[in-house]
Length: 387
Image (cartoon, rainbow, N blue to C red; front, side):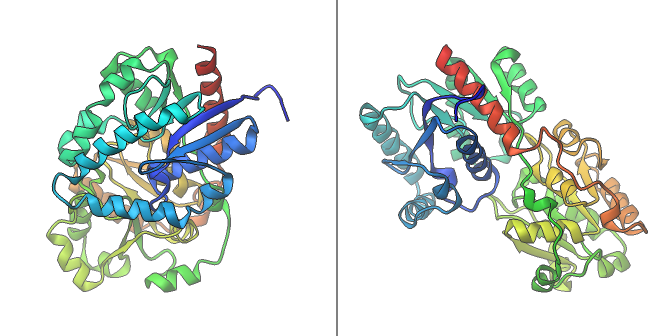
């Protein structure tokens, strides 16, 4: 049904983020696209995979096809072969440019920062953060090389899509983009994190007890600063470690980030490396933790903070602007690299007497819904088509 928000557009996207476990970029892309398609029947997406195109339906955003998932696994294997990533990107760029002549699309929505290659097709880059500029030492060389081309894309883009006011300010500062040409569409908090459920199954699965563990959610890589949290926890009294194990949830990143102190904690059972979990399991962990700690040095937003708040969790976060934005101020803030301050925050959390559920109102702010993100996205689509 046509309404004030109606937009007719044929939008191309990169489907690689949709093929892996849905965290970060993949989750944001799938959720925004699904919400746009549910709000507006005039938008049609087509996705570029490893070397070819496929139409996208809402069902495909929920479960990737076996064929495409296989392509994603093949790319992951290629990354482990010397020079293979560069060769893959070169071949894929050529395939993208050649195949565009057969595509009837209006523009490319680059959820992975930039399109696969330069072409005459208009594009909308999504810039989540500028950590590759601010903290290049926290990224692998191949990623920095790939991101280096973003400069030209940003210069040529009519609009830039980002996820927080902090990142919008970074884009203005680093690239000189006019603020009115940057649209902020914050991530939505999935409704699952507001649901109340019996967490016993999840807690039993991971050997945890309600209100008797600390939780940290994030990819195990240097920028997430998990090493500082682990050092702080290692310096805490043994009695705290025995009462409150520290559970790390998240995929393994590009480099080891568990300090040597962590080995002793792992062996004693105080430190639990859980890995990837489903959203339902994550909700149960948020709602049951003594506190959720998020020590990241640099972020575009800090989605685990917003999710934890929605689930009613107590939050301890590094004191950086996007974390204040994601939390709405409802968190204990700590200097990112201050081990003693993190230790003190954990000790303080261990002494709280109030039930976890009573700490925060379990509600999602209107600006942190996928419907709001979709509305902002549709506004971008209309502006690009009118340009």
